[in-house]
Length: 117
Length: 108
Image (cartoon, rainbow over all chains, first blue to last red; front, side, top):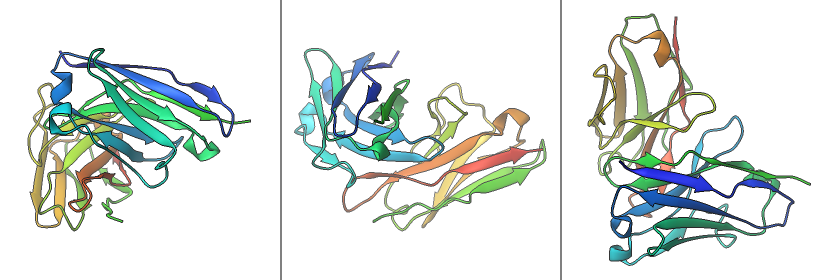
């Protein structure tokens, strides 16, 4: 059974940093493209960025609003995906989801990130 | 930037067929995925790769795609289907995922 278990959300001040983690199981992690998606309160879904599978080179790409501030990485030894968020803004307040894409998509349970002074 | 367009709302009576559309220039080249989202919960995939249904999703959910338009069809809509639905696809030039704005389905 595919499982994505997230951790690391919370309250942070504007300009601060936070790292989200997503522990994966039930599939070959190194073969999977992984993405982060967020949803601001009362709003729709927004793609944040992705990281290709290790077998496809492991490169990353980001949505314009987060490029240069957010970094997606993966640790194959721990089957874990990360989202490092720096220089956070109030508009980054959202629930963040990690997802496994390719064929059937699987989602984590979500992590609430609140950026407020 | 690439956009997917959905109607903000769709209304049907219980037992009727609900159709939610999603339009985008690249849909002829890229797969469409459909999500159902209940308030306060993570989205649930109901259709993947245009017309495939994951296990556990009721047969009344189906998908189709033709040209620049994709459609999620709920045959015999039930009261519990009254939630938000999002389409999702990729921008063929950037490989960035894009979501539609979401459609609130009302069944009454």
